[in-house]
Image (cartoon, rainbow, N blue to C red):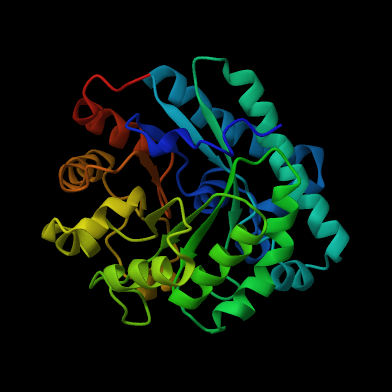
Length: 319
């Protein structure tokens, strides 16, 4: 049975960490080949599954050592119909891969111990390119597309679903609709360009408010991912109420733009300590922020630095 589906603990005041850039870690540090950046493809073999097990165990162990909770995001960012078809998966095989991804996280959760809250999240990715809104759908089309994967998660022990790297409003809205239909809590994570706006030019505020308005505020919370803090810090200075809807950050190690990252042939790991200091400033502007992790170029070293730097801002609310 899911442990937290009806009461997500990260909606409180306790800190939770999540993982870093899974794909960049597996490719550049683990030497894995990921077709289309699809980490779930490793689940085809015992060896690949063990690589993923070690990866997620690293973050569960980090959470235990720091006294935080952990949100484990399944390795299924690319495990949706279009991407699965490109890789030769049938619909049934893809569903089985999504289930295996959640079962892997169950084993990590069960080994973590009672003192470390472990939230299992079914990760949903964009139908198109993560950086470019190249397959624009209506909200209803997006709901229809993502429903298959979300329905699979609803039949597992996943506590929630999380849509990572949403780059336009309608797709995020569609994910929220499909999650609502499946009675699954959902977090929506937008990516932004160097000007703090979505690739479509929409502001973060507009994106969040539009989704909330069209879904009666269904998303449990929002996140920002795949952007460096310097890209969006200025957007958060207003102190306006909509900022309270953002509870998670998964930032890039690199200051480069999405276009520059697409052209890069080497991993830009940035500076973990500098990234951590930037998160301290962000946390001070974002009192609702409880979920801290990373995206492209980050690994457990970055996440550890970020969480350690931010822990004092949570006061006595540590586990």
